[in-house]
Image 1 (cartoon, rainbow, N blue to C red):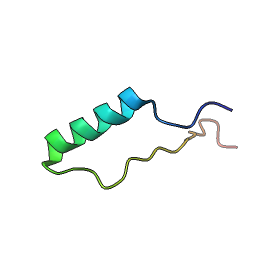
Image 2 (image 1 turned 135 degrees about the vertical axis):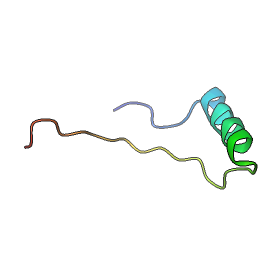
Image 3 (image 1 turned 90 degrees about the horizontal axis):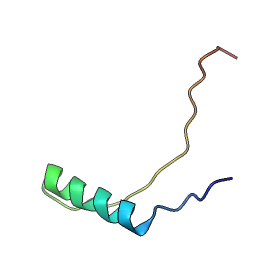
Image 4 (image 1 turned 90 degrees about the vertical axis):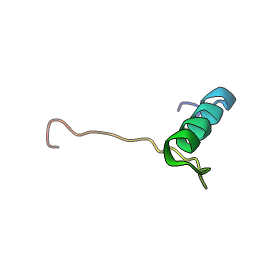
Length: 41
């Protein structure tokens, strides 16, 4: 299984970009693994 933690650089970039775009700091920074089912199992 891969490393689930955000790297420091990525987390910082996400927070800065959010604040620039929406004008206030994000309350949470989270991520979740996802999967797209393309064959309809």
